[in-house]
Length: 194
Image (cartoon, rainbow, N blue to C red; front, top):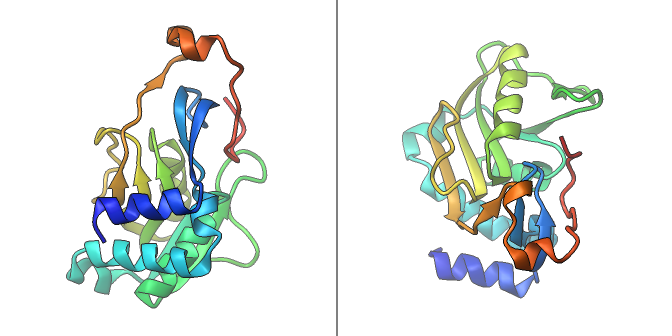
């Protein structure tokens, strides 16, 4: 699947939004990817996960014993990546503000984990999820995401495989362009703001 085919999947599901958005990073943007919309069609989600799994080097794919995703955004795509890789998919969540395994999810000591996100912008959620995996005895050997919005800047400390990189400009709250400053921001994501 090439970038145009991937973007066609986003457009077909009305997942690429335009307006004034407050991102989970605290930054603002005129564009937002509502990945939940692109993933609501199970066949589309499966196609995207298979395409991403194929981008991960074969030797690395064979080493993955678990897929872990941060809730909420990464859960659906993480599940589909688990299916594409033929391994279990777990998720971590923040009941008290810090990621942890719940619902009977656990890792075995030494599990080699692929961390899967829907969108990576600053890498904050991914880094917090990596800490939770390590605290549970696992080792994150790579990370993957449906979309990289970091402009290639994110460093998670492990190899990172995005399906597509989309680099829409983002702005600090005190540096908004006039067209954004003149309209109220919408917070479409699932994460509480800092």
